[in-house]
Image 1 (spheres, rainbow, N blue to C red):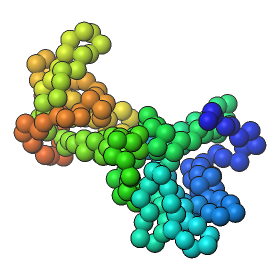
Image 2: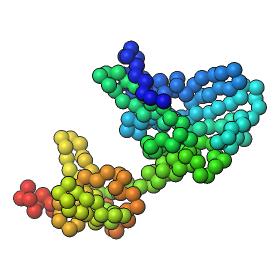
Image 3: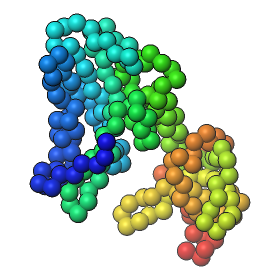
Image 4: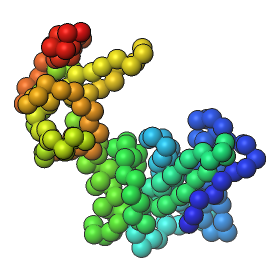
Length: 218
């Protein structure tokens, strides 16, 4: 399915988006109905868990999902969203279609019904979500070794870095000091996958940033 944009301006805020995701996940047919269990937004992507039940009370039979004890099944859905010239739009995918976006929180993944085929797209998608959630969120002063060297814009590489921050206005932005050069670099969460904590140095201040600035005469 392609992108669908709303030109009537009904979706403008986070609350509007959440309400629309709930509406899209709630419908009723002649034999079944679907209802939203949980929805959460990560970046510009909405992740949803939706439950399907039979109106006559019989267990739901499905080729992909194992029926839960209450006779229902709960599946995962992904809604890519964006604004284009002020108009909100979305593109939706069910987890068994193998969506690329895979940062659904573990709390949502745990709500989904078991899968019949461990080799399915849905199983791979859930594992990617778990892998993303398992990436460490390092503390100030933590010294880490990346799983593989990262190539920087100047062609150099780095692998051992220390977590620190810099200020942008009133906000603190996470960055990392390169062990080999003492320079600072921004790293994506994906680049931290499989990294190893070498040492921890928790603290409110940033000694590594202070050292860097002192070396720059700041």
